[in-house]
Image 1 (tube, rainbow, N blue to C red):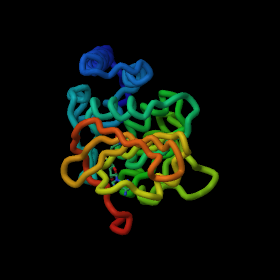
Image 2 (cartoon, rainbow, N blue to C red; image 1 turned 120 degrees about the horizontal axis):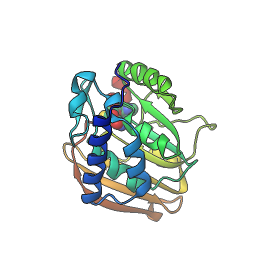
Image 3 (cartoon, rainbow, N blue to C red; image 1 turned 60 degrees about the vertical axis):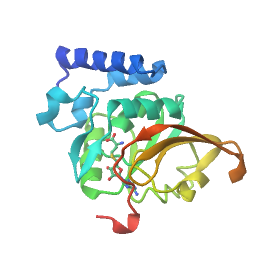
Length: 220
Ligand code: SAH
């Protein structure tokens, strides 16, 4: 595992952040965190020189690390403040997890693929990133009372529907960011302004392409 963070990496990362700023990301907390987290540590070392391009790359188990612009957009929409409890669905490479931790959030993250779960939990531990990792089905969220309810929920796979269990685990006043759809995904920010569905405010932020959120019954 290549844990070196060279001047070249740092320069490329600064350039990535400058590009994100030009493209409308203006939350300084997000830009700072993305400038501080070495994305190349969360990717195969063979891809080291491409790590700061705005591209998704394979991370094994047919999954991909999200584009930096997608991570930036989702993190900005989430409007995270330090010490908030954030539930992430789709740990994948752990990069989005690391960015949220760097922003000071208390992150709980769920992955359904055992191979990725094992690999990423180990990596986060080695990097001393203190997210709590769970192997399971994101549709169910985290049912144990000592974890939820959450201030924020971020779904990093494309969901065919809004999982009702997740909305139930979101605090009133909380925000969920979720890409919704079958092939193309519309980025939604749902503000849970009350317990009842009619009090939820839904805003749309453009079309993205994610790996699908799969049913937990097909776990492997
Ligand atoms: N946040 C990740 C994105 C990885 S891609 C990153 O920054 O790298 C999305 C991930 O969601 C994949 O790892 C996939 O296995 C996972 N996933 C898909 N359906 C899921 C489900 N029902 N529960 C939990 N994770 C799921």
